[in-house]
Each structure stands twice: as C-alpha cells, then as structure tokens.
Image 1 (cartoon, rainbow, N blue to C red):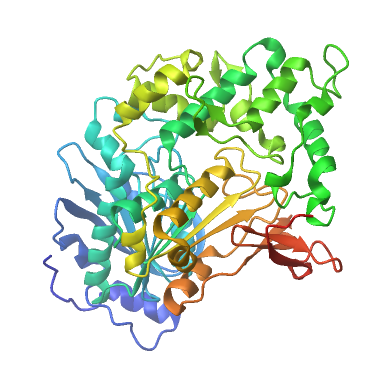
Image 2 (image 1 turned 120 degrees about the vertical axis):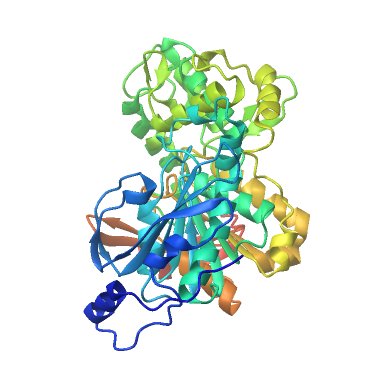
Length: 522
C-alpha cells in the first residue's frame, strides 16, 4: 500500500507538545492533517485533526455525536469512510496519541452496533494506545436491524467485514503517522464486541496478537431465539408472568440454599453449577401471594433456569440462566408494551427475526416455534453471525492469546455459553495448546459485561499485555466492587475450571482470603 511522504510536524502538534511540556518531539513521520491525503483501498480519510489535551466532544467526520469527554491526552483524531462493497459505508475513527505506547487497541460494539464506541476508545487512548472503533456499517440504535432488510452487503459488514476492514485501515494509518507499525495489536469487546472478538480470531487469525472477549454473543441466531423463548415462557398466560417485586424473593431463596457452598456466606455464589435450587420451594399453598410463587410462576422460573431445547430433537439451543441472576430477570422476562417486550435486549432479538430471518417488520415474537423456525433462521442468516468455530489453531500459531470472561449472574448471555465455547476450543486444539493460549474467567455476582453485586472491575488489558508480550499467562484476575466510588470488596477470578475458595480466615471482602482451587467439592 502506498503511503504519503513523511511531512514536517505541523504547528498544531508543536503547540500540543509545548503545552504538554515535551522538550523532544516524538518520532512522527506525517502530520495529523496530511492524513486526509493518505491513499487507502476502497476508503477515504474524511477528517484528520489534532485535539489538545483536556475535554473533547465526539462527532464531526463520523456524523455521530457523543457525550463530552474529559481528561484525555493530546491526540490526532482521524475519521474514515470505508466502502469494501458497492453498498457499504462503514464509518471508522482512529485516535493517535501524541505519547504513543507503540501498540494498537481496537474496541468492539454491542447489539446491532450502529455507532462508534467512543467511551472504550477514550480508555485505550488514556493508556497510550492508538485505538479505533467502527459503527459496523450503519448509523442506528443498537436495537435496530432494519439496515439489513434488502441489504446483504450491509449485513456482511455488520457481521465481520467492518471489523476486519477497520483493522487493516487503522494499521495503515498508524504506520503512516508514526512511521512504524504497532508492535502489538489487541482487540477488546464484550457482548456483541465479544462476538466480534471471536469472529476476528476465527476468520482473520493474524489481525491481532491478543484478544479479550467478554460474554460473547457468538451464536446470535440461537441466542436471540432463546431470548424470545423466555419472553414466551413468562407471557404464556397472565398467571405465568413473574412480577419484578418477586425477583428479590427468589434471589434470597437461592442465596439461602447455595451461598455457603464456597465456604463463606457473603451474598455471592462462587460456582452456580453446584447450586440445585428449585423454585418449587417457593410455591404458594394455593393461588398466588406476595411472598410465594403461583404454580405457573414456579414453572416459568424453572424454565428460565432450564436450557432452551428443540422440542422435537431435544437438542440444546441455548443454556439457561444461572442461579444468582434473578435480580435482573426483567431484562429478558420483563413486561410487554403494546404486545412487545420493552427491554433493549428483547428488541435486539425481535429485530433479528424481523429484518434478517423473516424479512417482515410486522413479525410477532409470539409466533416463533423453535422446532419449525430455528432451521429456517440458520439458513437465512447464512452463518454470518455465527462465531462458534472452535479451531483457533491458526490464531494460536502466531502466538495469539485469548482471554474470555463472563459474569456468573449474566442475565443476557448465559455463562454456560462461554464455558461451552471454551471447552470446544480445548477439545479442538488439545489441552496443552489451550493451556498456553486461552483462559476463561467467570465472575461471581457479575451481570452482563459488568455491574451486579459481585466484584466486576478488573484489568483485562494489562493481563493480556503481560501474556502476549512477556509470556506470563494470568493465573488469576483480581476484581473489585465499588459503592459510591469506593472499593468495598475484592475477589480473585480464577481460570476455569478453577474456582475461588475461602481459606477460613480473614475478611471475605478481601481477595487475599481466597485461593484458586480445582473443582471444589465442599
């Protein structure tokens, strides 16, 4: 690929460097503004502007506005439009810090994409990465898949092409600006971004050296069918709906049954796989009541925990939610408004079947029949949104490392989905290679991609850097939980199939009181 000739450092950058107190300019091969002339295949840079350290409000070249950001270092902001097909228009932004750590970090999207993830880009920029994000080829709300109706190329862009094309163009921009390629390239994303992470590893194994995939929504057709099935379960009749005020009732009963299994009563279930709580224990003697579950509600709760099965073949379509997730059941099992589920996640699923599968904007979620419709859905999706290939040998062959994480209380993507994928990779590549190349961390009490009662903040980026660059595989991640901005609990997250076990002394709010053990039995 041709590159623009090196240009003198622009006066804008001189001002920035003086402001930053830098006596020696970094080795920048091209000025920020000159990047608008960079020749890119099937793409064009539409904006290249220096941004001074401090506040910044996203917008401009991408056409998508964002919230004001503060405490950002000085950087060169580049926006580009990519057109790998005649029906493509992929917006991408690449941020190039004045003080660069020599590395590249791409960040993912959620749901149906539709906007650039400025928040995650800002975090990467603060760490010194050149960073990028894409709108996945369309501008819309994350719940809206209408862009795909009659536009197969745009669906391909969303599914995997926008991420790969962004990666190629971002690396070219980085090479031109700094005069050298990034020493290491990383991907970090959760949910839809976790699915993108797996797509990259499976389809384009040399794009990245290290990949962080959180709660990956990697089997979208099955996942969305499972979400719709939950809405059908709780709205089977008026009696089957579980009102949100009963979520805490069920959750407390689960804790009473299973909290102590890890050796300490602390409001968290370390390993829900060992919890066999049955909602039947909360059944009302008759009828319904505020402190018990009706017979129909008991059945609905049991179905939430149970895997979605093909009613004819009995083959599992999607695992159930885990014990401990009850406080957030409203995400997929909430009320209806005008006959439709009201939550964002439910809308994401309905949009899959309306615009990608049946191509009918008026399609009613209540008409879904798993046995009949799932095979149709798999054919209509063309495998575009399936990222379950366990053969990561090409990715691992160039020393690629993958860090998976998932909250045990995830109310959206069942944690067992990640366990299933991890175990399929181990089986595919062999235990020895897997031990050297992939780790799965499960976080007790953590909800979808964060939040929840358990420790839910941890530094996965530093962990993957240490692994890729220094060969130090993470033997645990120390996670923290905060209330009103103050850390009130820490806990080690252990690589699956290990779990954290309380050691019998010390505060249960301190990570040092726990040790990672293999398959605890008591």
